[in-house]
Image 1: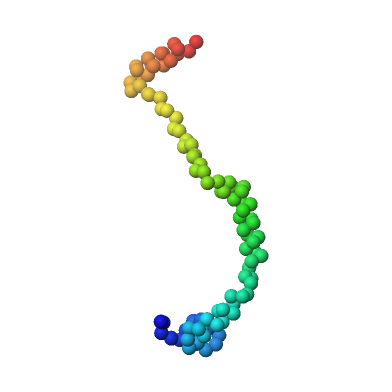
Image 2 (image 1 turned 60 degrees about the vertical axis):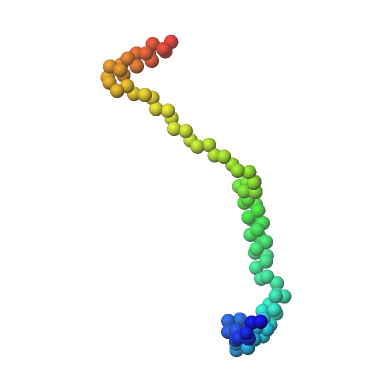
Length: 95
């Protein structure tokens, strides 16, 4: 069993209750109260559902994104003579 100790933080407006059961009485009274922000919560949940539908966040499939490919670099001949020969070969291939 828990020792009966004063609970000073459960009821801040009045004197501290002497036992745990005395501290729970005001909290039990609040259980029956309706949630004061329920209408706002419903509106926000509806808006979230609309946004999820627009963004397709409800899908459970993994989406694969193609990574952009880097263009292949043309081999550049090291010397001037090799570059001229490569250009001549390329020009000879063009009809």
